[in-house]
Length: 159
Image (tube, rainbow, N blue to C red; front, side, top):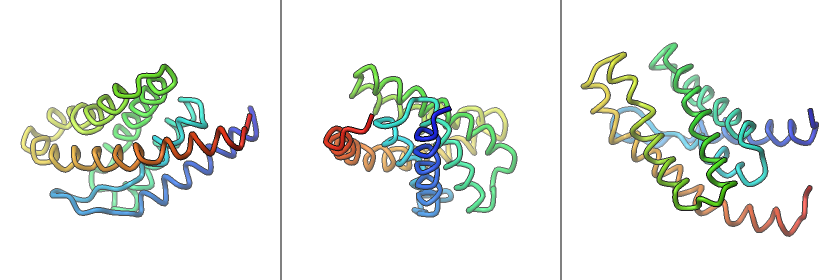
């Protein structure tokens, strides 16, 4: 295992944890900016490590808000891992429009779908607007930051 890779992953996971502490009130509950660093990390980290950072970010976000969904947060963390992993692979394959559409739909609609069956349809439909707004906020901020990080990363020439 590469020490540089582990260090970068730990730094991104720390930024995810800090983003998790930035709570934005959106309808039902709050949205956090825990996913922004994980999405931006696709520029410098392999997909697996970006997914790990997103998982840690979600768990810190859940812990900082009192774990309102209890053990379901483990499921959500796993969903975040898969979503960011796919997002990173889309980024690496040059799907620069598709990755954003995928992220917003996967994070805002598909990820909460299990709760339609696990909790109640009313919970799903109540949470949907808030989660879509949170996904759009995370995607929008990341959309602005990724080109900047790519430019710096190329200029510095880190291998």
